[in-house]
Image (cartoon, rainbow, N blue to C red; front, side, top):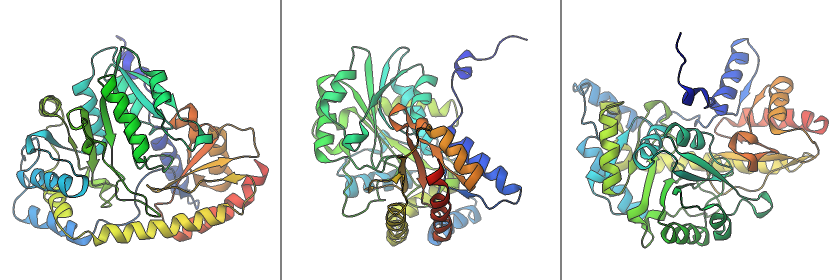
Length: 389
C-alpha cells in the first residue's frame, strides 16, 4: 500500500476531544465521571431560537441554502457587528460557516502560503497550531509569562516577528486562561501588526461571557485594523448552540472572497434551518445570554472561593469565558500526568495545560459550564486528591 498523508500524520488529534472521550467511556461503564474537559455549555438552546428552526423546517426550509449565508443572517451579523462591536462590514465581507473551527480553518487557508509564519500567543486553544500546519503555515509560539498573568506586551511580540510572519492569532476572552485583553494590550498588538504589515485573526467566540465589569473590545474597531483583521464568532458559546454548528467570519474583502470560494469547493454551507435560528438569535431578545452568564458567574465565584481553601491549588480570578486555569503548586508532576490522576483517581476529566502550549505546563483547565452539583463534587474530590499529588 502507498503511504498516507505525511502532513496529517504529523498533526495530533485534539487533546480536549481525547480527554472528553475518555470521560465518556468511563461514564459508559457506569462510573460517576465529572466531565470538565470540554467547552460545551450545559444549557439547552433558548426556546425561541429552537422554535425558529422548527418553523423553518415546517416551512420547507430544508434545501441547499446560499453557500455564503442566507441574506437575513448576513444582515443580522452586519447589524450585530455595528451595534455591539463598532465594526462596519458589508454582507460580502462575511461567510457563514458550519462551526467556529471551520471559520478559523478557512480563514487560514485564505491567508497562508507555504512557509508563512503564524504567531500564536501561548497558552492558546489546542487547535490553532495544528490548523496552521494543515494549511502549510509554520506556527510560532509566543509564550506569555504566567508571572505576568499571561499579559501581552509589545516587546514579547517583537521578539518573535520575522520576515516570514504573516498572521497573529488572538483570543479574547481567552481559552484557556480566561483573560480579557485590555486596551493597552490591544494597542500593542495593533502597533506590531501595522508596523510589520501582519493580519490579525481575532477569535471572539466568548465575547459576551464576562465577569466583574470586564469589557470586550474588538480589535477590528481600532484605527488601521479593519483592513487587516479577520473576526471569528458564532453561536456555540453565547447561545448554547454547540450542536447546531453555526459560526461566521468577517474579513477584508480580498480575504472574504477567497474564503467564500474555498467553502464552495469544500463543505458548501452551514445548514439552512440553523441559519434561520441564527438570525433570530442575533435579532431577538438577549436576556437568555445574560441569564446564562449570571449562572456562570455564580459557578465561577463558588469555585474560586472553594479552591482557595485547598492547599496546593492556585487559580487566578478570571475575567471571561467559562474555564479555570488551575495551577498545582505542591507537585513536580507534569500537567498530563496530573490530568490522568484526576481522571483515574477522582473521575474528573480535565485538559492538561501542556495541550495549550509550553506556557501552559503546570496548569490544568477545568470547565465550569456544568451544573453546580457536579462542581461541588469536583471540589470534594480535588480536596482529597490534591494533597497527594
